[in-house]
Length: 137
Image 1: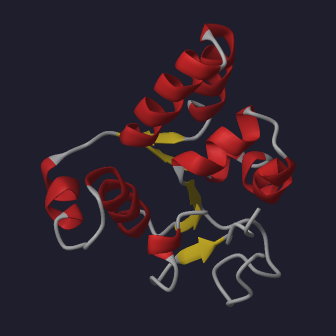
Image 2: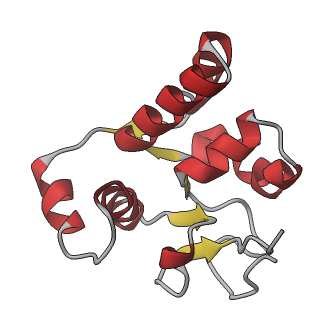
Image 3: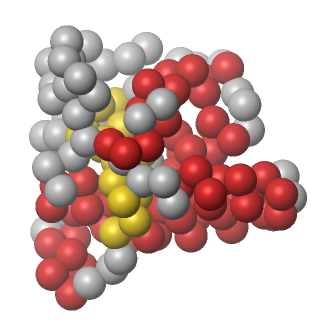
């Protein structure tokens, strides 16, 4: 189920988006949920990509699907704007009651005025988040 809350980009051209690592992984594993994230991936010029997301996605894909898939992921991710970890971003991340990587991803989205697309329940209800709930199996 997709959250129906109004948010940036609804009814207009694609807003700037940060895809959480789980969204990238759905795409590259070609799961049934991959189509949910296709609109953001169709506009890579509108993607902001936190460096920690690159790390998480490339590492997991290399381990589980091989170096070729990981390399394809890196190529696509680099079409967006890669955001390095810097002190102001790290300090902004400390204000969020989220795990380390998630705090950095959320702080990156906030710093760039981007909407965070995620499947992770602990983001649900946070400002600037488009939450895609996973249905129970």
